[in-house]
Amino acid sequence: MGYQRNKAYLLAFDDPDYEGLEVRARGLSINRALAAMRLASVFDKGIDQNYSPEDLSKIDALMRMFAGCPAGCGQEHEELADQGGGHYTSRIISWNLEDEDGAPLTPDYKTFTDQDADFSMSIVMAWLQGVLSSPAPLDGTSSDGKPPEVVSIPMETLSPVLLS
Image: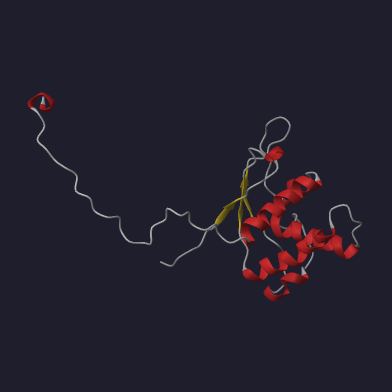
């Protein structure tokens, strides 16, 4: 039996408006992570800029990279050409997003892209931050890998009162 890696990222949000939102997502291969960084570079201009058709195409590809292609997508995606073309699969494992009535929303492309832009982009950027950042260093209390020092615990016979 071989090893299967099932890494999941619990996305972190700095915005207090997203307190309580939990999104779990899968990571990316190195090739896809590099492509995601190139696609995300469109935001270096700032959100308030007028986007060119090429910029909008990058944003769409980034959304698909996270949420997968919509059902019935008939496009062959250039950035997947090294894998024979095809479609993006959703990186979303789960979320606790609900509608106004408290009903859970399906974590798919349609639901994701039906949300307002700043919310969806916050999720994508949190995902990229989680996937592309290096793990936090261990705190200073971490040992050097040696077992803890063995300490003898004094033992004495219990008094008859405690034995009953």
